[in-house]
Image 1 (tube, rainbow, N blue to C red):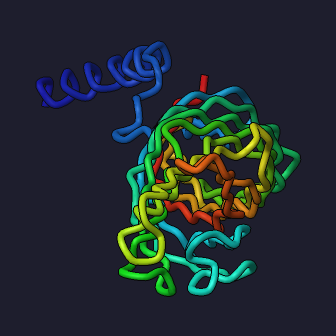
Image 2 (cartoon, one colour):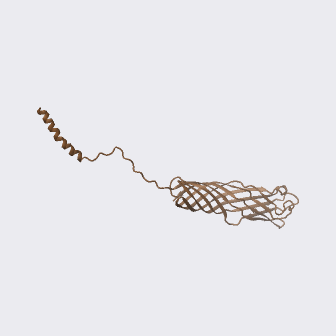
Length: 261
């Protein structure tokens, strides 16, 4: 009986003490703590960028030569006779520098391009005796573009249009070898170059932000190269002969990479 009373006395003494100790302990940590969400910044198109790219160019139509002379072959090549021939395809590539500014979902900016292209073509006048009148055209070897672009941004993609001015050399050579009678020895080699002037360029594309700094794009442009210029030459008899030459539009499709500063 004495042992039972002793046990109860010990338990009664420890009860308040354990409550005091429990009150002094810090609260237990939760078994799982959810991570703090970090807000993700929306992609922005505002800022300067540099880049480069390459692709292919092709003529949508053919160059046109219009005969301006009535020479020894005048009956076969009447004045005003027009003839044309196809241009081949060309590699086109170069560098880009530009600036964009974003207004909500709308983006507008200005862009400059400089690079290399070399498009050639040649063909004989189908009315020339023995096909002895041959024209050769060269577009390039360099190009420059200054253009504005504007579009709509959706998530990381930018759908845009582009319009501006382009410069590129345009030249042609026409040779009349006079291999058929009654031409005789009147070999004619005529050359001509388009004046250094701007031509309209327009098109559009899609650009996609891989990261806030790096983007890729695919762009189509139409170059209105409808400039007329004379291709002239002097024959061995001292007479001057000429043709009116013009280039039809050039079309280009390029893939590019930009780095936004």
